[in-house]
Image (tube, rainbow, N blue to C red; front, side, top):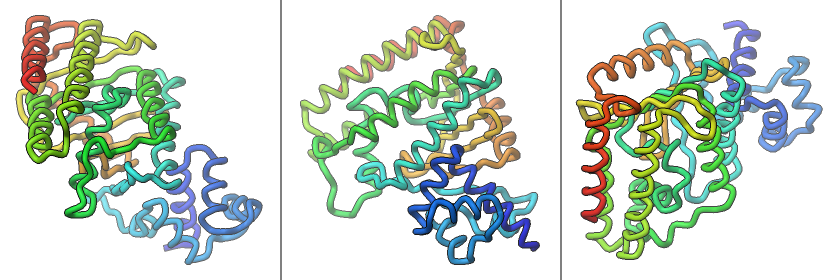
Length: 321
């Protein structure tokens, strides 16, 4: 493989990780412990990254060395596992989350931006402004991904101001996407209620926290039903299509097109994802999600009887907590 192609692949990969050049330069200065001008010379191609620097960058940014040297074939597509520490985030974790917000922010200038979310947990773009619901998913993530035998109680989970700000920014920016499609597992709230009941049974969530969760979930349902009835976000007027699938999902799938970005994600470990920026992967996943719509019931704007029945059933389920 020619060195020029390797170098081009590296630059393209790190620029995809950092859409804004200023953020990229700062991150590379801190990571490689070199001067800012030295970073600029490398980015301009005047000086090559050393092999040690390439390995350091690949490890820090989650870039596949296989992809850089061209071992990806027509029958394989590149995915990266984004292992963000959500409970005790470091600067690199914040950077990964903020990069996603930067990409979403481009939807303000893109008339063709689109989001497709096929999910068996509550859609992040809709629930992250709710304090207790967001904390519950963090709590569950830590319970399953944390150190064995050292489970924290729900009331011990703290969320910092910067992390909260990122969540709220994600909610705000997602409303600028022109068309959002949500395909919900028919048992989406059953799964959540089952989880809450389990953690109550092992005394990791107390009665007061359950009451707070219950109150927020009722507000969430009220907001979601109003959104489905309107079919658009009040803040921006951008369209929202909500479907109830006729089949259950083994996990959650998500893809978004904004400007020149085609992002595909498959949920892992509750909050983490394996992600791809490959356009072919995006096209494949989008086609599959659109095919799934054909076996789903639309409850936004149309389907009033099904919409009323669905939300009535979810309220009764939440009330059972």
